[in-house]
Length: 263
Image 1 (cartoon, one colour):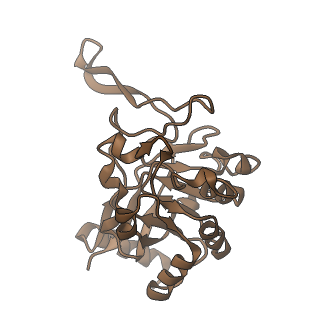
Image 2 (cartoon, rainbow, N blue to C red):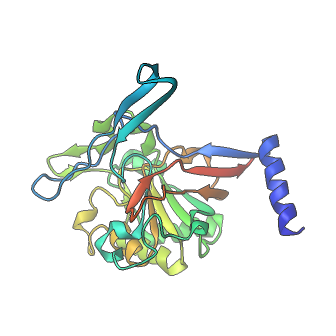
C-alpha cells in the first residue's frame, strides 16, 4: 500500500470510528490548577482569566469572542526546550521553530496508577521501565513515553492536584535514571498527568528536576497535566501534541489527542 492509500485509509477509519480520537486534555478555565512556586524564589504564572469582548450585543452584534489571561505552561501544556536553562541555546527550541513533524509520534503509556494510589511520592525508575518493556515491547527512538497515574482525576480540585503540605508538593514522577534511560532510547519526549513533568520531590534529586533539566538539554519535549491516559493501550496509540505557534514561545496550552484503533 502506498503512502497516499495509507492516509486515505486512516481518513476512512476516522470517519467510520474504527480509529477513535481520545482527548488527553483537561478543561482550561479559571478553575484550572496552576503551579505554585515559593514567592522568594520566582514569580508565579497567573490563574486563567476569560474576559468577554462581545456576545451578540452592543459590543459586537453578530458575534461572540473573548480575550484571555494565561501563562504558557497552564493546564494541559507542551514544554519546549527553551523553557529550561539547559535548552536555551537551541534555535529550534521554541514553539514556533520546532519542526511540525515532531508534534505527531507513537505513544507508550506506562501504567503506574496502582503505585501512585498507594504512594503520592511514587517514582518511576529505569528498572521499572525495563520491566514494562519486557511485558509490552521495546520503546523506540522518536516515540513519546507518558506516565499514567490517574492524577488527572484530582484536577477538579487544585488542593488535591497540587497536594502540598509543609514539606512541599507530593505527586509522582520519574527518577533521574528513568529520564537518562529514556534519552538513551532516543525518545522524543516525556509526559505526566501531574502539574509538572517532574515529581513533586524532584528538586532534591541530582540533577534536580531531571525531566526538565535532562530532557530539554537533549532538545526534547515535555507534556504536563495530561488527562484520560486510562483510556489508552500500553502501546499502539498515536499522539498529536501541537503547541500554539507563539513567537519565541517556551511552551503552550494544547489540546492533546490520541488516535487509537477500536478493539
